[in-house]
Every structure is written in structure tokens, then in C-alpha cells.
Image 1 (tube, each protein chain N blue to C red):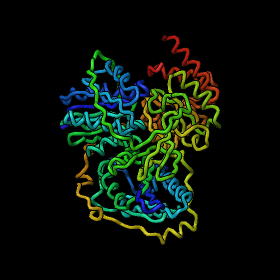
Image 2: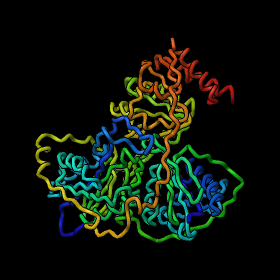
Image 3: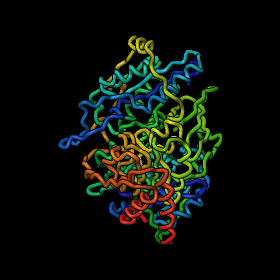
Image 4: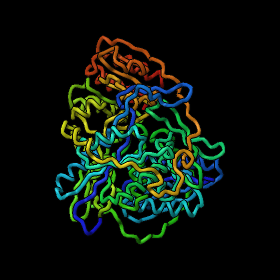
Length: 322
Length: 269
């Protein structure tokens, strides 16, 4: 039976990713219902700094490892903490790193793994709730056994600071050699907020006509909201914007509170990647575009005229509140 | 890597998925996907892995081979044939009723056993499937096989018994390498998958597709629905999203005004 919850903390040189604070906060809620403890696991370069940031969250113990091996350090640390706890649900972010670490831990201890989790139930054991088939169905999966992994969708669970004062515990170095050699790391773009984590996504499609609008007017509107720029497959396939921005069946699945689709027809490929967004606003010149069937609001008009005006209005409205 | 041979055995895992361009429906009673009339296709993400394997084979040009592996019902044969038509040398299909309903863990156990039986030097996978979309299988497989797992590769090189990849990150890439045998998941940025030409399609008909059942893999663990560690307990259909408002805007200012009003009503502004 799972009672304890273990949050895996993603960070970059000590700066913790928001989804990990969400995991830590959610871990407390689950552990309280299951009658167990909350652990956080932080590894790698900057782990001590990240652990200090975790102290503001409701975690009982923060386990720190300075082991800098790539991926293997995280899996080893999680295994150590989980086995010492006797049982545990490991929460990772549904991110590139979270999926890698969570899946390896699940295979190592032979437990179930649920991806893209948006909710949990705790009646008679822990179960994860996930939209599947692009939100066509909502499935619930029980995690049997002593261990389990849930990759939580970023931006769904809240992150709440508390007066929690987690005890920092050092994980002794394993002294193991790394099977994977990291030769270099290159940052090509400024650390942008990814579409999966943004609370507002402004996506462009074929109707944008070329690459420029993605870095000018769509970026401007996204910035006004503090959000991220997304794209349809058509725009990515045309080479207007990189694949990392693609929302849809062969891209990323997003469900932000607000999704703004600009010049996107709403083909099924795109629809399954974003239809679980809370509120969908579309701007399109065609009133009969398929997106009219599932957008909460479709404004029919010239996106190139509307979007800059909208960005200004959003900035004005935000300034009025500030 | 098997030291006595230079040529590599490259293995690519592939999956059968419902057509990504089909508008999927759920049977309101069974809550299952209506499969009638929905074509199945080769998982689009797997095509990048196949292409990467073929490019490596061509570049190495030393007798290295490409084998496709699929855990699929017998109906998956056409999908496997597509990979063969693209240029893979042979195929292995694990088709067994006992694997139906396997969760991620069960799938990783079966595929890892099948990969081990093939004695592969390099395993290539897609990053995810378009139906499950979890993206967790590559990591699980690497761990089950006890080999390095280099995920999200957009560039792959083989030299001196090592594989080196450019691994995509959230805002760039990192270069990572490991000794073979290793597993690499291949992203969409890696290549442009080739089309099978007529010669390839004709040639694929003569290529061997080996069928294996669970018994052939010496598996003792229970997989399938009964062995699942993550057990499906409920399937619900979400409330249907109603058709929203459609408003014509005369110009940019009016369009923006309509949206701002809407966002204020919904407390976004």
C-alpha cells in the first residue's frame, strides 16, 4: 500500500522548475489523505540551493545528492529514498526530464507509471486521473503495489508556499561511474516558458502566412499575458517555427487556463493537443473553420489587425490592475 | 557490443496506432474507442526512428542490419511491412493474446525480453506514440535492458563502439554519448522519413517477419490486463464542450474589444 509521496525536484543550477513546486504541494495533499510522509529528492549541480528553496513548501524531508551523473543520479537517489520509506508514490513533472527519470525508476522497482496526470483519487488506494485520446475520455488508473510513479501535467496543480520547514538530509555518494557522458550543453534560445507550462498559450497556424508573426505579433501578445507561443503542425511543417512550439497530436499536449488560436483552422491534429484547455479563444478569417465547433469564442476578422490591438489592450488592463 | 563483429544489429521498435488524421469517437456504452472505419497506421513518431536506423546503416556500410520489432496483434503486419518497404532488413512481431491490456510496465517487460533475444547493439525508438502519448517507454526499456538510454536525439553518430547524440533540451541541446549497446529515442527534428518506393514495397514481400509468442521469450512475469501495475478502474467521457460564440469583427480595434470584454467576464483580465 502506498502512503508516502516523493516529489522529484527538477532544477537548473539550483533554480527550481515550477512544476516541482506543484509536485511538492500536491505531495502533501496526497500524503495527508494516505497517512504518510512527504519527501523531496534533489540531485545534481546546485542541489543544495534548490533544497533551500524547497524549505518553503510542505515537505517533511528534503533528500539532497550532489552526484552529478546524468539521469542515473536521480534514479539512484529516488530508489534509495523510496526503499528507505518502504513505499511511495513518486511525483515527477510530465516534462522531458521528469518522464526520463520517472520511467527509469518505474522500470527499476517494477511499478506502475501514469503519464500526464491531472488529478488523483484516494478512495481505497491511490489512483491517477488522466485525459486520454486528446481528452475524448478521462481514465482512472489505480497504482497497485508498494510503489508507483505519476507524471503530473504542469500548470494543473497549484504550488503553495507554506511555513513548512523540511529537514535537509544528505544522500551519501554512490561512487558509481556514469554510463552516459555529457560532453557539452548548448543553449540556443533564451530560457523561454514552454507551452506545456504556460498559463496562456498564443498559437499561430497556417493563417500567419510566414515565420515573422511568430516572433513579432504572436510573441508580443504572449508576452503581454506572460505566456508562451505555440503553433499548429502546418506552421511547424512549413518551417516557420521550431517543433518545440508545436501543439497537437505529433507535438505537445497543453491545457492552459487560456488558449488563443490565431489563424488556426482547428484540424483534428491540433484539436487533440489543446481541446482540454479551459477557455479557448480563436481569431480566424473564416467563420466556418472547424475551430468554431469547440472554441468558446471565435472572432472572425483579420488577425494581423486584431492581435496587436489586443496585445495593447491586455497591457493596459494589466497596468490598470497593477 | 559483441566484440567479434563490427557490423551492428540495429533494432527499431514500432507501434500500430489509429490514423492520426481520423476524428476519433468513443462508444458511449463501452467507453472504448470506436475502431470500425478507423484505419491503423505506423506510429508517425516511429518513422523518424526507422529513418535514423536506415541512415546509420547506409553510413556505416559494413553489413550492419536493421530489424523492426513490434508488439502487436497479427493485424499489425501491414505496419511492419511498411517499415520493411522503407528498407529495414527483417522484422519480429510479438503477437500474443496474453499481452492485450498491458500497461507501460508490461509493455516494457515484453519488449525488453524481445530485444534481448535479438541481441541488438543499438535500439532506436520514437519518442512517443500518437495514441498513448506518454513518452515513457524509451526510459523504461533502457532501464529494463540495463543499457544507457539517450532520449530525445536529433542527431545520432556511431564511432568506436560508442553512440553520440545531440539530445534536445527545453531551450537547446546537449551532446551525450555512451558505449554500445544503448537505446536512443529519436525526435521529429532528426530527419525527414523516406517514402517506400515501388521496389521497396515489392522487396518487402520477400523479407522475413518472425512471429513470436510470449512462450518464445521465456517470460515468467504476468503481463496483459491481469499483470498491469497501473490498473484501469474507470473510463468517463468529459462533458461535451458546447459551441461557443462566433462574432464578426469589423476591424482590429473592434476584434480586440470583443476579446477583452470576453476575457474580463471570465476574469482573465
